[in-house]
Image (cartoon, rainbow, N blue to C red; front, side):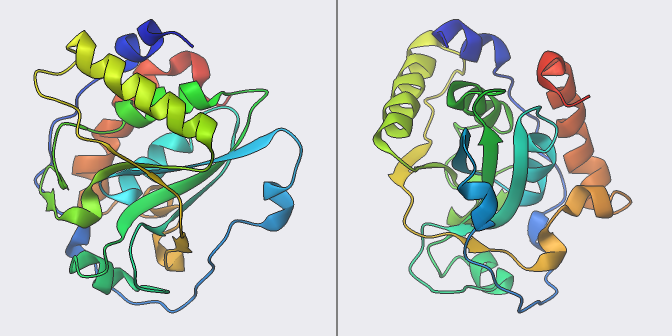
Amino acid sequence: MKKLFLILYVISFNSGFISCAQKKTEHTDKDQSLDETIKNTQNMDTATFGAGCFWCVEAQFQLLDGVISVQSGYSGGTVKNPEYKEVCNGTTGHAEVVQIVFDETKISYDEMLAAFWQTHDPTQLNRQGNDIGTQYRSVIFYHNEKQKELAEKYKKELNESGAWDKPVVTEISPIINFYKAEEHHQNYYNENGDQPYCSYVIQPKVEKFRKVFKEKLKH
């Protein structure tokens, strides 16, 4: 995938007026990994991205043809089995992330990166709109050296292209842990579309995403 693909498909998003952290109900159901059957299936790969509120990112990646599974969770911190309220306090070191299993015969990691940079404004340090804190940082957690090389390459090319008027500050780090978020955070937009955050923040992002990636959407 060439640099042009990323440049053409990168769009900055307007920040919302409602915070992802407004809902802080608790749940104790934990699962640290994706279903092993899915992970071990031939032609499947895994990507882990943080791009602000995981409700927003999940809703967008679910639309892509070739994406098999999207789970919201926490990565990059030091606290084991963190709860949402702990992560929201910014004391765990974790970022809100989505972990995505995708079929490489239908969508490449290059295209996954293009979608990642489309979902948010990667020039904002430790925030997305009104969601502020290290838990909302822009981050790519790579699973192998190939993913690392591609992420670093495209980040460099995006900065050189002037796609944004400020530098891309996306963190690129190895995946060390992934903790699945509480069950009520999974498939959030599809199950809570009438909530204000979904209506005013997530829906506009989903609509823009659909327009940009219309050739890559599930039918």
